[in-house]
Amino acid sequence: MNMEKEEGLSILLVSCDKYMDIVRVFEQSAVKYWPSCPYKTYLLTESRDCRPADVPADVPRFFDEVLTAGTGKSWSDCLLYAVRHIPTRHVLVMLDDFILSAPVDNAKIAAAYRVSRDKEAGICKLSPRDARGTAAELCEGLSFSEIGRDEPYRVSVNPPAIWDCQYIESLLEGHSVSAWDFEREGTVWSRSLEQSVWRLADESLFSFFDPTGDGAVGRGSLVKGFRDFCARESFVLETDRADMTWKDGAKKAVKGFIYRLNPALILRIQQWLFERREQPS
Image 1 (cartoon, rainbow, N blue to C red):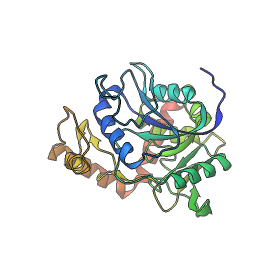
Image 2: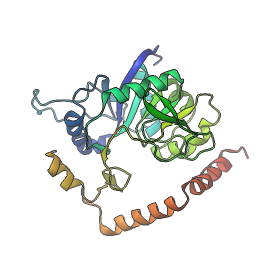
Image 3: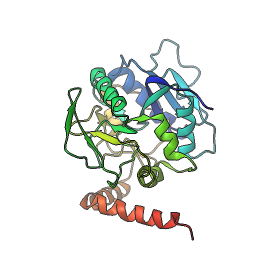
């Protein structure tokens, strides 16, 4: 589907059918903490809406439209389906298990969008997480820095970021990958694209329940403390998921500790292995 894009910004929550229990919590958090969102909001799934048909019509919704990409597709194929159906040139991409925990500032989101548009950026990350940036510059009252082409996690799905839809299409042309491979391999692919990548240098525009840095779900289980968080926030959590065991939590903590020792080196090793696979034999 080729759609001529219009100037503007849309919100896209990327999910899948098996995460609809978590999306229901995200929607409650967005209704609470982003009730005045001025942009059209989309939920990307494979085939299901996050709400059962019997939910009363007067219960507030956050999503204006559900995009169903179809089952059996890769994560990147679903993302491409979404951006090809969204009419605006820019889209703020978010992940389903990052549950809002504080109000969103519409003025700052609008300022970040204008910076992304004016710089013709492929990606504008709304947090200083992961990749390092150049010396910061003040734009629209926010501090931004450009991420160099050789930086690890130049392309990532976390934190939330404003993307140029055309950049996503160029990045994924001829590729079909998982979300994890999209970060590692997409960082390599991004080096050949002209558009720059930026990030906020000293603040994040979203606050989440995020004690581990990886969202509310790990290895398919609920991260420790998430049930209590939902209870405190009066969010209804209806799920068959188990809580993460102490063993899984320990593995996750050890893996995170090793990564934090030298994330750039670890990612460069991963990318070197990927580049070796990509070379023609």
